[in-house]
Amino acid sequence: MEKFAPNVTLDRFLRLPEVLKLIPVSKATWWNGCRSGRFPKPYKLGPRTTAWKASEIQNCINRYSSAVWRSET
Image 1: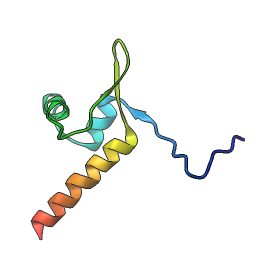
Image 2: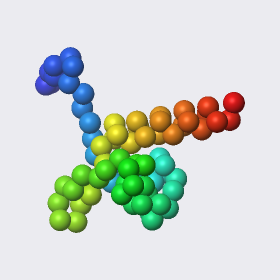
Image 3: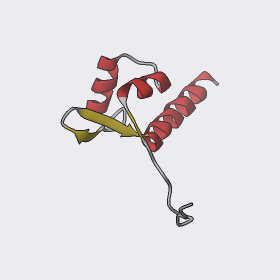
């Protein structure tokens, strides 16, 4: 078993279908949000492979869910 330093976090990449299950918007809305800065910027892993860091998607969900929660109260 490998050991990691205590302050190292392991992150994984999510492809677009996985992201859209977590943030239910259309593909066009997602890509427009990435361009405008509303959503995280993608990482190009290969010529036809784009992904997002899971931690950045989680931060995005937390940011928008707390904004919605505040606006409802």
